[in-house]
Each structure stands twice: as C-alpha cells, then as structure tokens.
Length: 235
Image 1 (cartoon, helix red, strand yellow):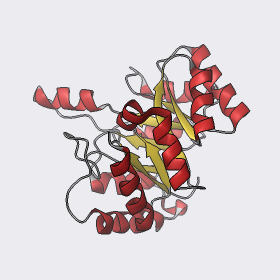
Image 2 (cartoon, rainbow, N blue to C red):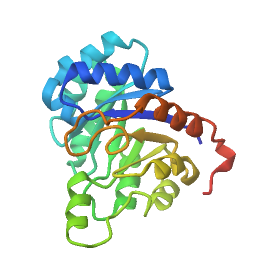
Image 3 (cartoon, one colour):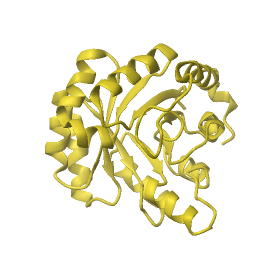
C-alpha cells in the first residue's frame, strides 16, 4: 500500500479564495489540491489553469463527476493542468472507458467514484476492472443531509470502507462527511488517499473557508496522517 497522501478539496466558488486556501494548505503540509465541483462550476477550466499557474508541480484533482462526454472532458482538464480527473461509476461503461483512454493519452490519472451506487463494493471492483487508477468511496452531501433530516443514522463512508479496500488492488479514498478523527483514521482502514473538505476545512453550508486557525489545524492533521506507517494497517 502507498504512503498516505493528504488532499484538500477546494469546494469554493471564488477563485481568489481558492488560491489563498490552497497556498495555506500547502504551507501546512497538504500534498494534493482538488478543484472541487463548486469551483469547477464557478470558474471552469480557468480555475484549473490558475491553480496550475500558481502551484506548478503540485497534483491537481479536477472533480468533474463525469457522466458523459468522458474523453473530451478529460482532455480539456488535462490541457488546463489537471493531473487527476473523476468519473462516476454510474456513468455508462463506455464513458468510463473513454475517460481511462484519455487518461492514458494525456497522462492524467483516473479516479472512479461510487457515489449513488446500490452496491458500492461491486462498483469499486468494476471501476478497477475498467482501468481506473483509484477509487473514491463516496457518501454524497445531499444523501447525508436527507437521511439525517429524517431522523435516521447518517451513513458514513467508513461503514463499508474495509470491504471496498479488500475488493480492489488500487488506492482508495473515503469521502463524505467524515469528522476530523475519522479522516485521520482512513489509512488504518487501508485507504491512503485522505481528502479534507467540507465540513473539516470548508463551511458546508456557505462553501466558504471555515473560520478559526485553519492553517495550524491542517498542519496537525497532516503531521498525524503522514506519520502513519503502512505496516499499521488494520486490513
């Protein structure tokens, strides 16, 4: 298993705030930047280009959540400077194949996202079989909030994380409402790609940078995650 990587999700709608947050996160020890879906909707390719210009050499994940037009979307983001793109497991098989092919053609890694799948473990294996480089095991924002509002227990990506990790031979990332403590625990489950986003670093309701001394908090989080040894895995 690979050593842990810390990724910050820039789920912001203002590029200047995203650039400031990214710079702060990198100072704190974050490894990868994610152009979150809200940022891509607000700024598109221009936002990715600005991140690439400001942070040469840093991996940039474009959270496209691609459902169709996979080759073109991947090509566009790769040329803008993204190093990773996201395709949905619920897309058509041909779309996933197109994204994987474009990833090879334009030297970007493909992250397959099992959000919304009835069988997330089977979806993760399917994504691997189709050539994705890593799996995002994902419980969605609306899903979490809707279930919580009904009074039921809010689902967590940790619920099936071990099963997903055991089903595939590629790196796994758990996403969706994780607490700080849960995010730090992800490598123990065998999921080395740790993403920090709403609500840890972004205000989940306003999509603005969270209040408080975020840089110090991020530095402590990064130190804890990076200190993890692959031999400590529980799986």
